[in-house]
Image 1 (cartoon, rainbow, N blue to C red):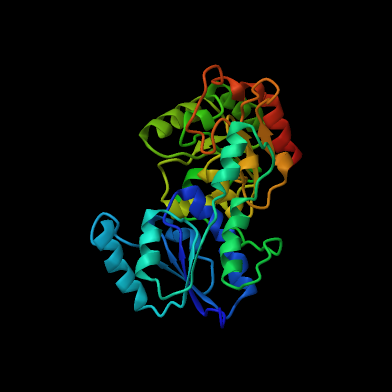
Image 2: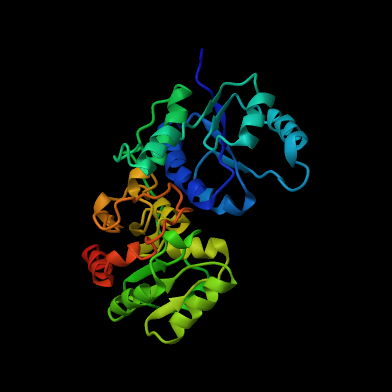
Amino acid sequence: MSKQPKHILVIRLSAMGDVAMAVPVLRAFTEQHPQVKLTVLTRSFFKPFFNDLERVTIVSPNLKGEHKGVLGMYALAKELKTLDIDAVADLHNVLRSKLLKWFLKELPFKQIDKGRKEKQALVKGTAVKQLKTTHERYADVFRNLGFHLDLSQSSFSEPKDLSENALALIGNNTNKWIGIAPFAQYESKMYPIDLMEDVIKGLSSKYTVLLFGGGKEEVAILNAIESHSSNVINVAGKLSFSEELDVISNLDVMLAMDSGNAHIAAMLGKKVVTIWNVTHPYAGFSPFNQPSSNSLLANREEYPLIPTSIYGNKYPENYEKAARSISPKEVVDKIQSLL
């Protein structure tokens, strides 16, 4: 490349956790390369993730309307060309972004290497070792565009002021705040709810516990937990997404699964404890800037096939109780050690 780009299109359309993982990388990039403007192509729902990043603009395609399918990607590419972009950093590398690569073929276009072969070897058990993190894989895309990028030089925004809605919900609370997000996309990535209730009981005697989730079924479960607990407040379904992010920015610790909420809390510079069921941090999806000791793992001597899949969508027979090898006391003790 003859000269460094001045305006980069960054592609990461979904999913929530993957988009959240991109934020600390983009923050580091903007701080280390203040002369470069970024335009992020992502879903409009994720726009609040980027509120604090300087020189970052969000473009949200209408993937169910005028930007649907091959012709839609062609129309989107034509619109993007009007923005004077001079390079593309594709952090997604899926069919949609490959189509954009074709339609924007006159631009330098670098794509993430997802490390599929190494991840297959990890799941098969032929090479069980720590793989490159997703954050470093994202950073490599910018490095391949000719930029130095050091993720160890990271900063985070200050906790946000809470809205009237959030203050009315949580109250003037001076306890330490522990966020707990007990759900994940797949049941095989979750800690059993009965054990999580023991964790909540152990923590709520000393701290304020804030529960996070989404969807009617999850909200109903969290409401039930809140109803027979003291010092426990269910935030799910009661605040806007932006308001939830502001609450998370004020937590002392977040407890989550291998899930989007873990990455959101890490993106905001919070201490994050994660519970891993049949997935494993070796695949590279640990939350940003967290020590490995904050990952609580199922017993691999008892369950040697872990990780049974990269994304938790495969749950082998007799592995349903893997997460039960992590005791509630272990979880509570780890959180208390961070306070």
